[in-house]
Length: 270
Image (cartoon, rainbow, N blue to C red; front, side, top):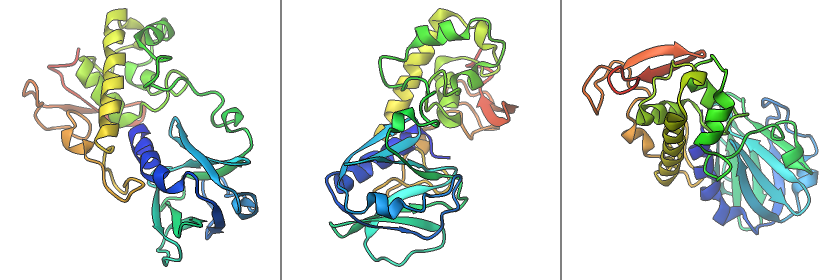
């Protein structure tokens, strides 16, 4: 599933080709996404110029002169640029064509993503309750420490809660906990302020570095420019259950935590 670095990589890839361009047509081949694509999307968006492309959590906000297209990549979706008129393949559900001769094409084999329209996206029900962005000053270890008091749930699902902080999905939660030396099974409320300060630093560092490396290539993910990400080559824990730890040499253990696979090192993480 594309996580925050993959979505940010997509945003950065499409911005130079989308911002300032005027939409000439929207082609919807299949409206059956997680929520149906609005039937009047073509009428609402065609003729408008794209003002900016932002990201909020894992949502892309394609801001037009009037209104915003809220896009989510779902489990295996992607947005990429293709020449206008290029024949669509299976699962290529939506094209947003521009007067530049390029089209922004949305592909989603599982149809679990979304393309919704809003005149006030930050007040939309999908966005209004979200926590702070992890790469901003609004997120730090103090926030984690304060919100964790009295919580018996494990620390990994705690930091993956979008009300606590957005965008820390399974891959990057696994890697950040490894880097901070924290066992993902530990109760969130039992972790000290000092360890949360370190964890917040590692979350910021790992997400920023993953964005720099173009995200993690998993299953069908590619960036908006059609290029894969390279962070997967540098993973320390995620997806490496049964392999040797790159730091201490012990065998990494894979468990189920919060209905997700989780990998940790019994030597490095306490």
